[in-house]
Image 1 (cartoon, rainbow, N blue to C red):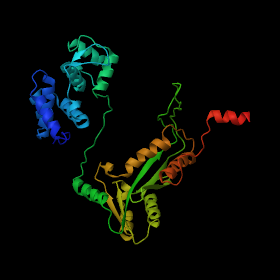
Image 2 (image 1 turned 135 degrees about the vertical axis):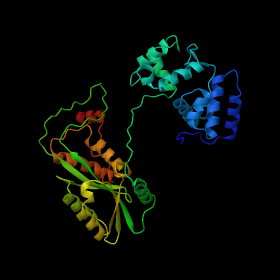
Image 3 (image 1 turned 60 degrees about the vertical axis):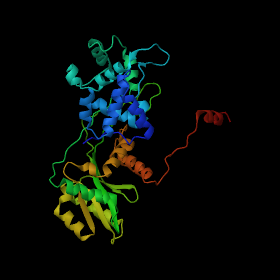
Image 4 (image 1 turned 120 degrees about the vertical axis):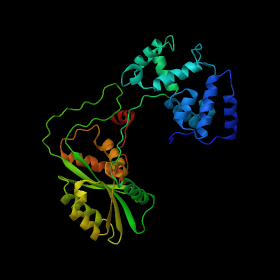
Length: 360
């Protein structure tokens, strides 16, 4: 099934695409228009690539261009011109350069990743272009929206009840149960006392240095947290351990925060303490219902995205020397996250104001 398809065509776009398809003097425009029309006709991208002689990746790139910019995004003149410089390459050569960049480097050069110098050398060796500079190639790829991106991982769940659990959680997310409250529960940690790298602005080119640690004797802490979907708030407790005893105490703390008559619908993963008999028996007698995510599918728990922000703004680029200091940093972020304080904690005084105050 195609994940990238052409959006619905406007009447004037369809007329222009049909005219482009019939062009004989500009074969590039004809092929691009054909790709869009075939995709709109629900032809699979892989089959389109076979018909027009493109790669599947290049077909998807053309579809993205059309969806973002319309016909102008895929229509090219016979020559490509950069600013006021002389004409460089024909449009078909431009498309071929982009297609090479989107092709597998393993198959073409026997390496796992392209670099601009290697891509330049390959283009010259294959006589696609007579010569090209690395900087011009970088600008060229930027203009054609061919960007270097980090790869992502994915994991397929092996849970035989995956779809049953998935649909139950999705139904819960779509509509709030009557006289119920939706909570997402999970543990954040373990929290070590260690330097954590991050990002910062550096005007003079120098960045903040963090120490390296190999031995950590401060122990760890765990942050048992829950996300309230109705109020968009994130709360939690810090513990030294996260056995079923601490988790049950945490659930009792959560239960006391809401009226007893209100059922709590909790989304949580299959971690051992969550499945403990004592925990499930307590939930059954205290108006709490568990929704377990499928195995290896914790991404269904919406609290995970809030943990990402918590890590970035409270822990990254830090070197906390005590658990109390680390805990205070997390609580400061949560107080802003839960709208209990304004963003600024200190007023800004520009240097010119300071000089005036000193002169006075």
